[in-house]
Image (cartoon, rainbow, N blue to C red; front, side, top):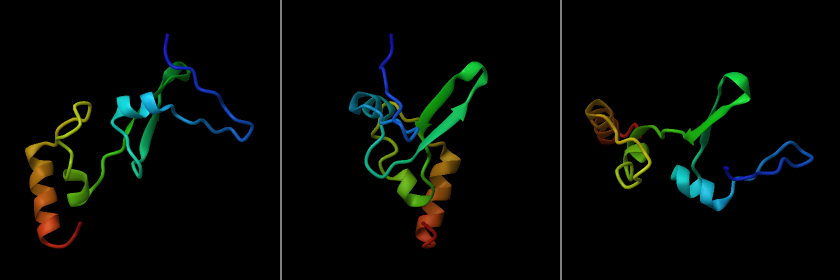
Length: 83
């Protein structure tokens, strides 16, 4: 059985620390929620854009490593000051 979360009167849910660690989420990260059929949802850490999204992207074992194209784009945008 999974982790139980409680919905507040305001319709909000707080994710437990263990869930956030599993996602590889930290302070300031945004979570992306995809609504799937039959009431299911998929939650993942939203990809950051620019050089900020590239820095540290290889450290999390749960995060997908960036593609060569994504690395090149982050490098060129960062170099051009478009981070």
